Image 1: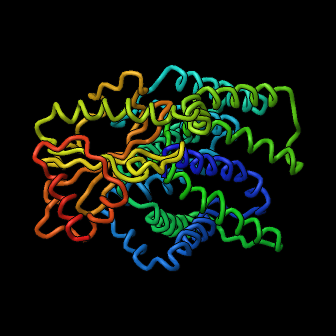
Image 2 (image 1 turned 60 degrees about the vertical axis):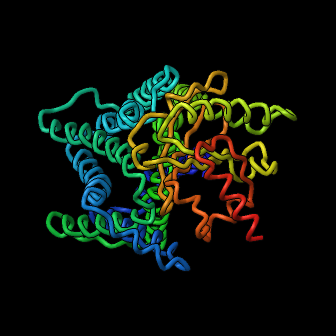
Image 3 (image 1 turned 30 degrees about the horizontal axis):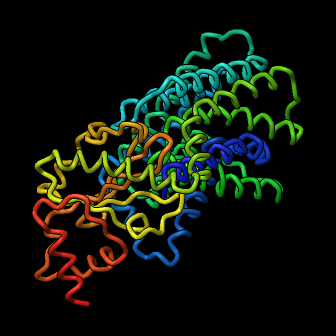
Length: 442
């Protein structure tokens, strides 16, 4: 999955969250924590249904304590604080403070390995914040009483909790999205416990209210969290952060369509600011997408050679890299404009390259600049997926020299080599001997 695809999936979460308000209104007068318990339980069920045909998916629930603390703390902690904010503070003021989280995500992303903030990311996020201020300004009560201060503090802290959860998801990218089902179930149980302690149970009165609850659990409190997890772990976190300001705008639009709110000039101005900010923040993704789909004949191959020259020079200069080869569709001449560049690298200590920022050490010249990366593990091989601005994703797969062993040849290696293998660096003739052994085996 490319970074652009993951970003688009993450954007669907924003669309689903924009339905949260109108669906919540449609549920009637169900207490907040009771509604959270019911909808998060449905959300957990939605996730577990995707395990059908994938019996190993349940193993995703076996995660270290930190993953559970971040997952459950983010989902339950954020919603508990937001409910508290709405109980003690005016909705407009609480909502405005809460919607600091998109800006915080954009800023916090600078702390991640391989992520860098460009001016257009910050400009887009700030425009979104201004638009959100205008959106809420029309509903402001104009002041706050002393008793509302705890609610305002809760809303402010909620913004930091959700932004931290989102950015930490990137740090915990090895935790599969299937684990979110477990986080949703734990959140449902905690919400049920709080409901039993402080609320009175109120059941839906009509079929429409039951359907609204099911829709909430399946969408904004279900599939949205799985889509957001994919976007945060594999997509452009800065674009998603800035684009999140569309949530209150779209939410207001759906409320207007449903007859729960009225259109105004302030909403129109906010729409322009938020949409403009989102487009500015997503400039890299949009221009990269255009270029990927409109590569002139021969241009893609020319770009590929420039990229390979830069990587080859870097590999030659490092004594810990023994071999480098281009594999897959690019190596066999069957690549499309949207194909990734797949590389296999033989190293003396592959794991030693995990915590290094070596992608920024490669002289990319006219190839673009590194805008982010993510790591993945595939058993004996681990990969770093590097995204260049205006260019394809490059997958660097690292393996020990034993990957190219010839006595015997690893059963999985021949298919990779026969599927296309162009040797770029071979300091110890490991690839040469491997290809000869595979040819000899027929």
